[in-house]
Amino acid sequence: MNGLVFNIQRYSIHDGPGIRTVVFLKGCPLECLWCCNPESQSFKPELQFFAATCTHCGLCIQACPEDALNPDPWLKTGKKIDRSKCTACGECTQVCPSGSLKIYGQEMSVEAVVEEVLRDTSYYRRSGGGVTLSGGEPMGQPDFARQVLQACYEHNVHTAIETTGVVAWPLYEAILPYTDLFLYDMKHMDSQVHRQLTRVPNERIVDNARRLSAAGARIILRIPLIPGLNTQPENLERTADLAAELGVLEVHLMTFHQMGKDKYIRLERDYQLPEMPNFLQWNEGQEVIHRARQSMTARGLNVFIGG
Image 1 (cartoon, rainbow, N blue to C red):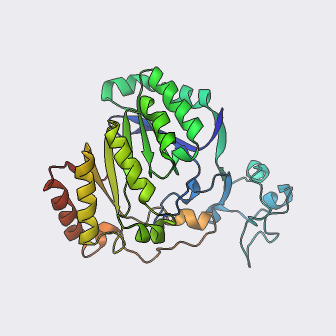
Image 2 (cartoon, rainbow, N blue to C red):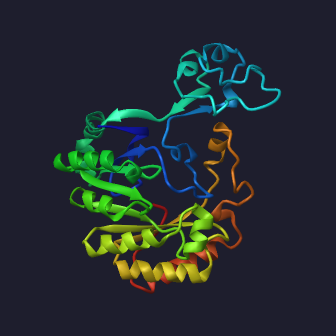
């Protein structure tokens, strides 16, 4: 079986315990306003354009079989890529001398991914690390995700998955035997607001979290803190109540940043939160962190900033 992978990051010290290899699968059912990996959202390969390094040579225009690139190499008007024509074939990337055009998303087999993961087995054993499937939403490719997790698990590699909890419960049930840790996002407790922020409601997300807990899964709850969008005291209290109910191992408070902003430019997309401050530069930021931490610790939960 093949899956669509847009990055494999080795020697990661985030996204789970120890030294890890993080496999990023492409595609996500959510469209979070603050998403810092917009290249992960589409379930298809995508072409990105790095305007800052372009030499305006025009070789890509000549190479494109679909005439999907702007015929003006200096881009006096319009965008570089006509997405309605581009098939992400990669012909333009082969001739670009500056590497200014890049395809995000390549098909890989389960065997190829597992081979890459197993290269660092000695580091996992020494540090207590392993493999983490991330995205996008890795459960958007459920069969591929399950087979990768199963193969790594059978090689005695610690397995983790970062998930929004948005897919149907039977898909999570299928990976339970092969998943040592769930890094589970909780973005907002009010379903209507959740829909406004992510384009999907949260009933299934909350229900799946409860089902995983009841099944004995080890869960770290991750809460993105987005200034003014989900940092209201009531929402933090309700999230803390859910975390306590689930009996999670830890709660990770993930503070908003603008590090993904340039990716929207490279994809020639509009970014929804250009004026929002980095969380730690937000006047109320430290107060919100203190309030969120206090809500969690009051319920006996272990809290960390970051993940």
